[in-house]
Image 1: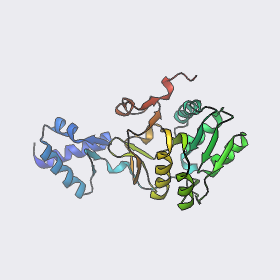
Image 2: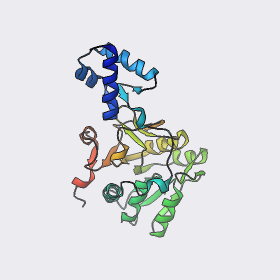
Image 3: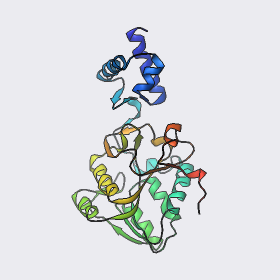
Image 4: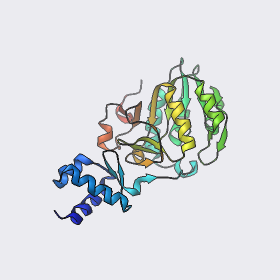
Length: 252
């Protein structure tokens, strides 16, 4: 296969699948590792795809800007409900629970039934809803980021740094096997990272639109914690040992 034809095929495969591994390209194109690496480097330099560790991702699936809560809250609502119901069922009365800002984490609030659990959140709207339902809730403090309704900054970081949570629930703008759990804003990403690291059990709540997407800031690797999704998720993510398919699990 000629050089330009092979690069065209790589681009087609990457855009179709949204992400592809080096080994997959070697097998599909019957080419050596060094040849595929060279092609990926050239395509990356030409800004036609993004080369990542172990493969490549389509530029159309690199997310660099946050969407507002209003833009996101009605997207994939059915999937979010299934995921949220399962997530809420995991909380026990003895838990100290961290709930991250996000629309899917927000969806789970109405299904929480553990009246003696303690809740901590960096999201103003989450705190209000939890309080309205009669739950004991603490707010981290910090600077309000209006786009996502998250509290961020040094005060938020210091508060969380001194806490330990038995269980935590997080949103993620992007999930990639190569790049892990990612979010566009490094400041908010750093709050996710410190909170995630202080949770004994941690769960990423993600509908199918979040997979094979990469954002700017990685706050955790793909094998750290559990992913709660539904049957619409891509097969390679459903097959991971730490993925829970919420609509296939009977809630106790």
